[in-house]
Image (cartoon, rainbow, N blue to C red; front, side):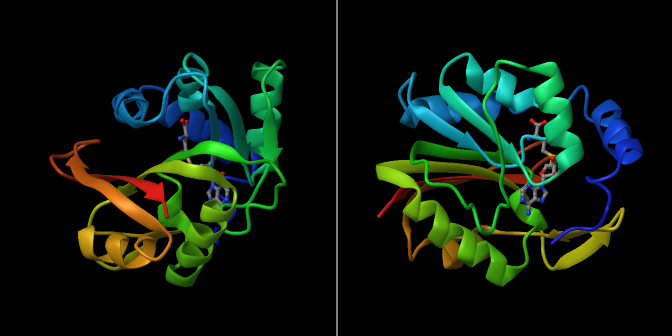
Length: 189
Ligand SMILES: C[S@@+](CC[C@H](N)C(=O)[O-])C[C@H]1O[C@@H](n2cnc3c(N)ncnc32)[C@H](O)[C@@H]1O
């Protein structure tokens, strides 16, 4: 669930400016330790395409988003790229992937949506497929710039993902402040 922030031209342009110096290079280094290069990767919530561009250097990557404004931006900037309109919860695609990656997207899902998304991710992964998702670390939830934000910790992530995945690691890392983020890496059961 989300408000309009990622959906209007003005706010998408604002977000692209605000996030221009942020990228998931270090997270993708972790992904590379468990998913061989040239594998097929789905990115959920590609947004401006910053991480998509890094993933593209190593993988056969498909970008996706549920915002038409971001999808238009992606297609305009990367005309040779493959992008799907996908919602993170329903993930309505017939494609299958070796890995699924997202960077600061899944925190927009409410508790039951995150569980439905985990089940669906299990279904669209090839056997032994890997997920790699980052989250804001903390307790509870809030609405920020009209967007729902659900904070997570090791316990909440373990509860959600254990049914469909073997958790390989849940590690703290620093996005802006020490230990403000968590990276989950898990393998399809
Ligand atoms: C913080 S940005 C991600 C930035 C991206 N990782 C990058 O490399 O630039 C969050 C993105 O998730 C998308 N998003 C939010 N909720 C979503 C949902 N339910 N399904 C799919 N995409 C979603 C937003 O439209 C936005 O593009």
